[in-house]
Picture 1 (tube, rainbow, N blue to C red):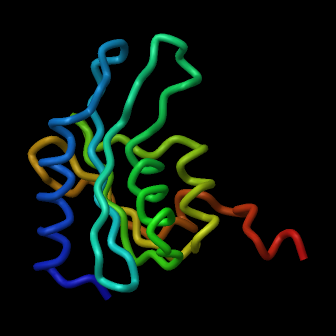
Picture 2: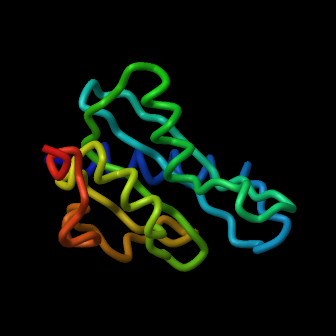
Length: 133
């Protein structure tokens, strides 16, 4: 269970990370903060590209940073946008790869939580590694 102190720390991390978003095309800055089972926090920002499909979302940046350092179990992820927007389908699928029980917290630019639920509520019927067996 995520306590209030850790929730606040994750939101603050996402707020700080969001400042570094590279979004000259959409102007929609996103910051993410991922809490792993080991207790480490990884941040991420969206990074756009003139060749639009080459960009990447903040959620995947945070997850890929964690995975590249050996992390495979995630407790929670904060996605912080101007208006508390939800992760795209690709990000939902990447989160699902590591567990549909991962808590997803959506927050607006001021850090106010807009929605909080396990990923399974954002991606019902998720295709997971178990789907391949």
